[in-house]
Amino acid sequence: MPETTRETVLRISGTNTRKCMLCGKCSGSCPAYDAMDYRPHQFVAMVERGEIAPLLQSKSLYACMSCFACVERCPRGVQPASLIEALRAMVLREREHTRLPAQLIPELIDAGTPQQAVVSAFRKLSK
Image 1 (cartoon, rainbow, N blue to C red):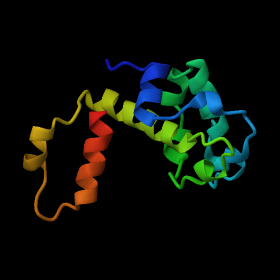
Image 2: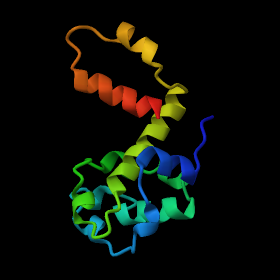
Image 3: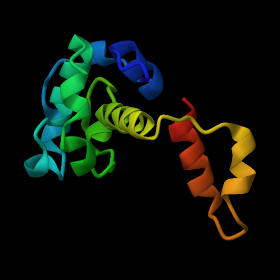
Image 4: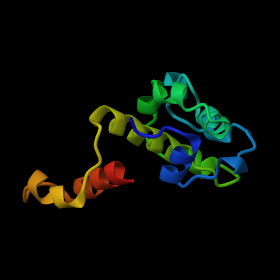
């Protein structure tokens, strides 16, 4: 089973959760706020405390629209959306039990596959 620690989430996301002052501006600007069981500022706080397991089971992972409104509104430059994306990647890796080696990419795509889809899949499965 892949590692699911605070350090893993921070490494994948590139986010510094210690900068968060829990002002809630990220959550206040979130268009998916009502559909989330954990709000963006709660994601940041929970990752900082190392409470990763509940987040991996959260419906908020998929309620998040990745619009980055939370990132834009944060006065301290914390990136809640990046944390959520990192947690999504961890769930995907646990479910698939795989990482995508670069040498497999050519056999998985065809000429009609958008390059952005290839890059996105590789990024999510290779960190």
